[in-house]
Amino acid sequence: MRSGGRRFPLTLDRVAPKGPAVRADPLLRPQRPVHEAAADARRLRQPHGRGLDSEAVRARMVQRLREQGVEDERVLGAMGAVPRDAFVDAALAAQAYEDTSLPIGWEQTISKPAVVARMLALLAGAPGARARPVRAPLGRALEIGTGCGYQAALLCALAAGVTSVERLGPLLDKARANLSAIGLIGIRLVHGDGRRGYPPNAPYDSIVAAAGGDAIPESWIEQLAVGGRLVAPLHDEALDGQVLVVIDKTENGLQRRMHDAVHFVPLKSGHL
Image 1 (cartoon, rainbow, N blue to C red):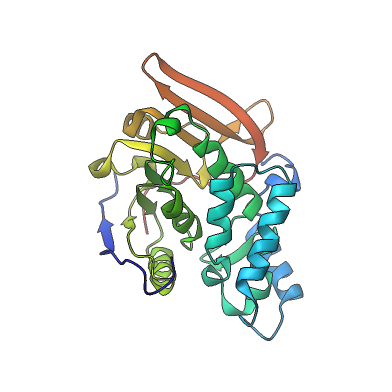
Image 2 (image 1 turned 120 degrees about the vertical axis):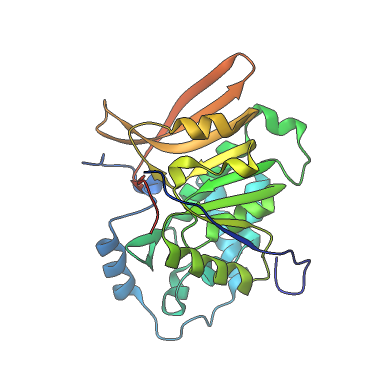
């Protein structure tokens, strides 16, 4: 996925708007409060910037993920191929492969590698994935919350096509620049309200969200293909916090399972 590979046109669509967290396991808390991530970044910042052997440190990150229980080799392969340091500021590049969230601007953070890998592995484990090409187990994928573009790049390595929706225009521009910098421009980027999904490209075999609310938007369920899977944070009243919910859409209806406790930013309506 580096420069010089096959290149595709990048599409940036703009759509019109329509009209206390649980104390989680540190492994599964992908997005700490921004002030905590920023303080940690300042404490650990090294002045040499992006002067690191990216392939070697990626390999070590992948080994740590494997030791932490990530077993899907397709997901591990994607994590080892995509340079996470290309999606953070140069001053933070030395921390890019630590299992920590980092600030990316606009009061947002890039999620921890362990959580990203966990969610992608859950998606790749969908029953319908067995019928898809080996190189594209996620089929057609929709991402809610582009952020800096890192997970979108990983999705591109695992899916036949990727659509990613981001409500913050400046952050979407940053993601587009990050993706283009590594020669990966075959992703449809949408500036819009993630709660609405993106109907023009539906149905999707995989939907993954990087923000959570009190309920899964009905639009996501409608846009999920039969045989597809959705993975997203969801507020759990019993825990008074978020958990990962996995929803499979079958011919007989929806199957829902709750997984790990997590802490993501809230899902918001509209776009800026």
